[in-house]
Amino acid sequence: MLSAVVAVIVGFALGWGANELLGLLEDATCQIGLTLLVPYASCVLAEELHGCGVLAVLTTALVLAEYARPTSPAARPSGRRRC
Image (cartoon, rainbow, N blue to C red; front, side, top):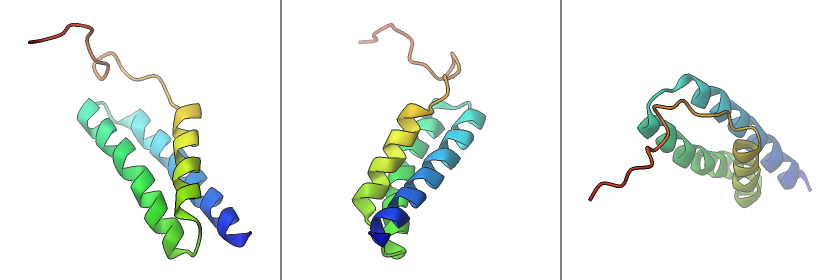
């Protein structure tokens, strides 16, 4: 039970922090890198605190998806396909 609580707290904290940081980043490459790095970091941190890493990743992903801020037009992909 305690491992689940630790995992949810870690996942929520890192997800919330990542959303705040994503709001400050303008570069799409940095935003993508951060969204790939944060779930991995939440897994490692939760495991170090003897929590469930998978539950931490799930919580992080849910927080990132639910509270995501709209991206700037420069960070959005253009609809044109280049061959």
